[in-house]
Length: 138
Image 1 (cartoon, rainbow, N blue to C red):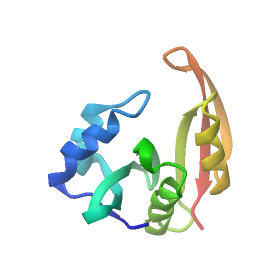
Image 2: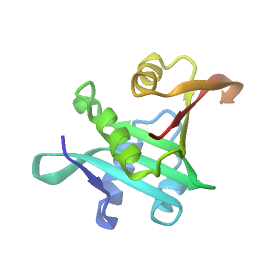
Image 3: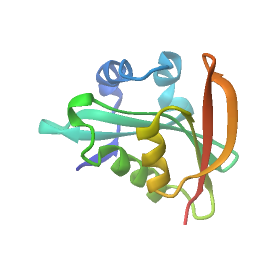
């Protein structure tokens, strides 16, 4: 499935996709072209149906948001977005992500692409526990 960098004229579409996240960060998405990298997974006529927003810091990066429209889930799109990020990151750099402890689907995805649990964070998401993951890029 095609993955490419987001274009500035697509942020309204990405904002709609963001509404499917449990804890969206609209201000972060609005500043994404300044603070991060956004990849999109596209469908018919190059329309974004998912995106990954990664924020770089000290040579490493953090997956701040990853969402795929519900109609397009379970088809490998999230995995493809992560692979695009890994392909762009320098070797030996780290990629991190924080996931709600009860989000089994997300945890399974991240573990399937090589992330390893690095920390537990009680009460991180509005009182819900979180799991921090880390993967070193090869």
